[in-house]
Amino acid sequence: MSTGFVVNNLTKNYEDGIRKIEVLKGVNLDLKKGEMVAIIGASGTGKSTLLHLLGALDRPSDGTLLYKGENVFDHTDLQLAEFRNKTIGFVFQFHHLLPEFTALENIIMPGMIAGQNKSKLLDQGKELLVKVGLEKRFDHKVGELSGGEQQRVALARAIIMKPALLLADEPTGNLDPKTGDKIFALIQEMSQDFDLTTVIVTHNHQLAKKMDRCLVLKEGKLEDADL
Image 1 (cartoon, rainbow, N blue to C red):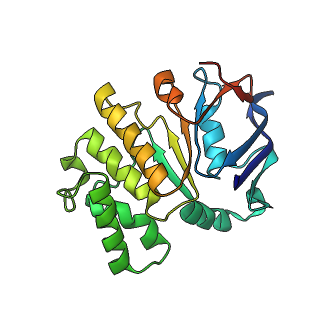
Image 2 (image 1 turned 135 degrees about the vertical axis):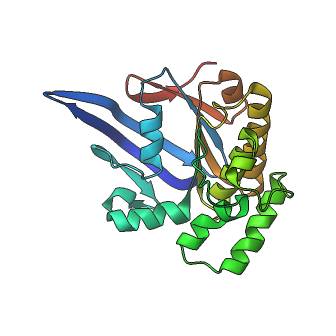
């Protein structure tokens, strides 16, 4: 069963003076609802570029990203921003939390941007903090949290809008192995609890083996990985 996200012949080129650098050369991908997909590959092969396109953070040189039958990239920049806010959740290697706000305030930020009711958002944010094991950290600022705790807040922020797709770029790469394993287990748990389709870019092959499907980005194209 498709989750409604279908990638067709996605390409991405960059101009470097007189040269054209081909990063993605016709990527195809059909994401099934509720599955967890790992994307591996050598550094510099374009994994993060692909993730940014899947999340509509950038536009491709060619190709389409279909969601419910419509090409996402036909939207205006403003429409794309609204699409990202409501449909995509992001977790990055570096959490990108706002240091001047508390853990709870960071979590509800996407909902506030969308104009949702603050009281309801606060209740939802507290529930998510409990789910990620931070029920005693509601009012703590970012600087008062450990790296693992910050990534838990980032995960809760990513799912506050109940997205259809969760994208994670090296979410455990900046953490020690033990903490990284706990964060990955939490991502698995949240994916199951909220029936999320999850795509994780990672260099960790042991982590990739635990996922439903593993693909390798090689020479600009995706293929099944042999781990």
